[in-house]
Length: 415
Image (cartoon, rainbow, N blue to C red; front, side, top):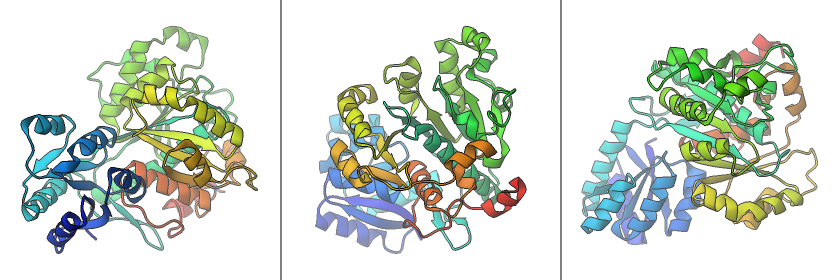
């Protein structure tokens, strides 16, 4: 299985790309006929690279700014102003000769050495196990309405990435790290990470502790300012909870926190509050590579999101980075089905998360729900969401056992 790429443009051009890629380390997983088609494919296929003709320069430049986990290439001759625009967006301009362009693209992607996964019956396997350079992911979870499962989704996604990072570290020998930052003033992430109500007298470390650090602080110093949840392999810090912490907190500490976690962690998950214009939300969105907009199937929630779309577009800088996730929070969904939600909002559906019977039990046990039902539909949905966020290749829904390595973990937790 080669490195997955998407070829764009006319049938003649994509056929040339497919022919040139045959027998190389690249695998053309999709042929996009339009920029809209490409956006949809990026949200579902998890391709590592995109090759488009020069005629697509404008669309490719816009996408490259929003999709930091994908490497974009343009094949053909372009004028200097177009070259400058593409270079500014991180797009590589290759030869007009398709064979030479594909060869150069393969060499570039192999140097980047992306990590991909495929499900087997027993575990998740590493397909490309060289991890010399790895594009970092900063996923920001947002919803303008509370009670839609935003924090629940963020915690479980971080836990899935944490387990995946542990698997990769064992396979490659390079330590990969996952951080979860809870910036919601009503932060509930700690309930799934071993604190309240399991430890009502204790609190996780807050980002106020970053005031003792500086821009060049080591990972060791940063990790001391965070709590560590060993079962999910996730480092965690919450919004200042005590009066003393809030008094010591200021926007400069938040900026330093976000800068340091981006520097020392490969995968960062940020849960923000419902206030679109809060300084914490704006700072997180500015740092984010992906915005995960969480919704449930309630028509009232869909209405709130529709009313907020214009404001979100202005704050997000457009909706190209937005990934819509729809939670089914009830056993029997009496609301709108997820595809209808997506159509109503005019956004591509990145993930559909079915009802999770273990949601309430997860709070009492202090572990994310994916560990309580690793083989369930919810765990599989979370796994596929994480694959898309990390830019990895995704298996077909229902083809895997959920998050890997949980049998041993369940015995450890005695659950």
